Image (cartoon, rainbow, N blue to C red; front, side):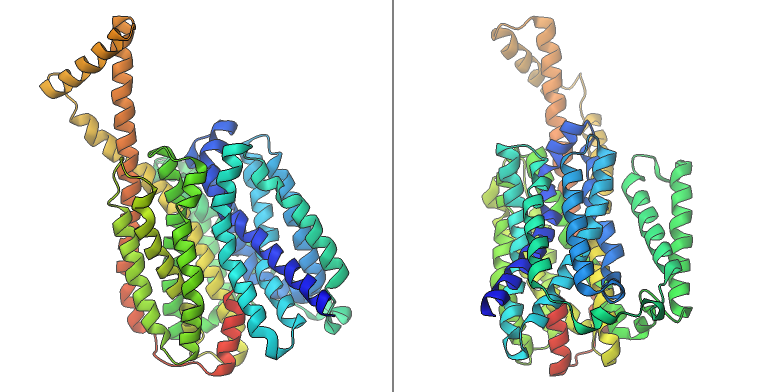
Length: 521
């Protein structure tokens, strides 16, 4: 019996880590994927965004889908979808196919976290569940840490398709172990699907609205925003679908997401703060690997290692915060300090120069790790203050969705913002280049003469010197635009800080804390 429990623990934690690794493993591979598939890094970022969108859509529906199909059946199917789509990603011949495959992968992966947690808790008796939760929580933090490091090692030594196809043997093994050792609950054997109402209109409007809005955010800059008819159409579709979704969910008797609980002030305020946390966390983890590889010349492995300090800090600090909240420390204290640390993260990272090495980013990454640890569980804890017991699962589900949605927005907005700021900085720098300027003329002459002395034709040497200056200008423009992105994160957190004042300082009871702890992972 103990061996069976151990196998179940390994199975569900492995499946959850596999999903989390795929959230971050792509970040260090964007340059290689874009070069191999002949796309820009900005377009290639859809590989990350598509996964995030799928997660946003499926996460709030996992509870319903598990009830409708049976938890074991749904879990097995999700593992199968994730594994098959991993093969599709690794064998994608072009960017469009890869993005579609990543969306499907996100649909499968979205179920693995919450369903893994549910299976794990049912495997253990109540007295041993805190230890199970601790094991699962460590896996949740380890996953995003392994992702960039593993991705960097694969990119440096193999090829990018392996970051996806490495999931195939793991997924097959997880599927076999789940089928063999995970038992079906009694209610799964007698599901009355006719009595379960499916909110088809809500699901359709949610998927349409989020998808259209993400397209506008991703493609707006490249298409001159509302000068593009396509952007106007997608903006209208996003507005109508999201407004329609909100109105429908407030009126239907069987909503896919019960938005009526947002009438509780604490939940509304905490979800605004959670959105900002998702924006900052996903946005910073997205632009850091791209910046250090594109501008500073880091290898993918070095880029992945650069994220480790923040993850290690979060691993050590999160259990301390959990015990402190259980001991009576108000979550509001951690939320305030979490915001301060994220503001410091954005500001200190924005002070980088083109000459810095990996050691410069240790302090900003530590600030990010502290901010992540101090905001994740406390915000979930605060989101359920004032909710009725039967409303708590809906509140936690909504909070998890909002965090993922904030992350999807963070990646999309960072991508567009950095691109816009690049052209602004490049225009400013070019305007300062004057052929009649003695300093510019001297630099051009020195570069040209250096190339000529190396044996290059004088005419070609002049062209090469101009290209070198243009390259330096491009590098500096990108550097400044990415640093502006880090500052934008700080600005978002500062702008959202007043919503902290809306949170109630009320300690949740033991039963609620237990539900929060189970759902936080």
